[in-house]
Amino acid sequence: MRRISLVLLSATALSAGAVQNTAAGPASVSPMWSGFYIGGNVGYSSGNADVTVSGLNIGGVPLPGNASSSLKPNGAIGGFQAGYNWQFSPNWLAGFETDFQWTSQGDAVSNNATFSSSSCFGLGSPTCSASASGNATLHTSINWLGTVRARFGYVADRTLFYGTGGLAYGRVFHSLAGALAGRFFDSGNCEGPSGCAFTGNVLANGSAINVGWVLGAGIESFVPNSNYITWRIEYLYVDLGTINDSVPFGATVTIPSLGSASFVGTTSYSAHVTDQIFRAALSVKFQP
Image 1 (tube, helix red, strand yellow):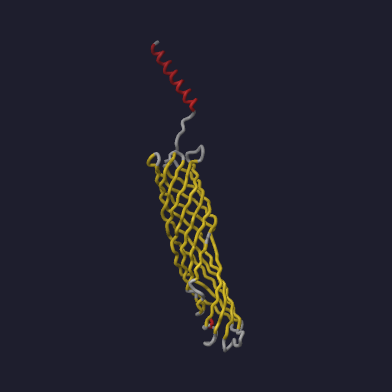
Image 2 (cartoon, rainbow, N blue to C red):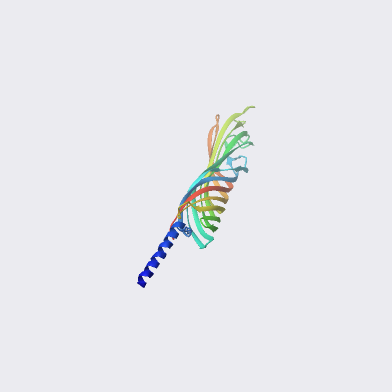
């Protein structure tokens, strides 16, 4: 009889506890940030490229050199990210992340210039002279970029506030397209006050991959009712350093009375390229 009473008392106590827990609702389990993750992102990027082009010489005629321009390549950006988090205390997290981005960033600027020469592109007599005006369009675009970064942040339950920094790399494309027109004066073929008209064009393009650094910050949080999917908003400042490139060019000069001549060579291109990225991302965390 005593045993039966003990069993009944135990069952009653368990039932009361179950009722109490049910009334209080299910216990809330805080998500664990530790583990690998992978995801995608999309955003907008605004860059800056301070470009200098020099050493452009067509048939012995140096075109106006050391032309410096400030371009603002901007556009959409998107890609993927992957990394690992280590939550080493209830409120602190460290980790690493790598990402790769494709961009539509680009910008162009046009400049006008006048010049004169006594060599006449090597087409006339030793006593020739030429004067011309020209227009050239300089274009720069960032095709893709990536980063490898450390992350360190403060965990407030389901939300992470973090800073990040590390290495950045990217491919920058550059081109120069120009046209010129003027008058050609040659005692042998183009005499008189009007001389001979001539036209020309020049095209140069190249690309370079450069390595620099990146710094940024962001806020990341688990989506409601999930302990495995996170969303974030993030800002990154990327500095790809100074790109120095030797760019091949081709040019053609046409003088109706003398014919056409083609020229090839190289011109020096230098640009300091930076980028500011604003993006949103979703990631899926794997169980540790």
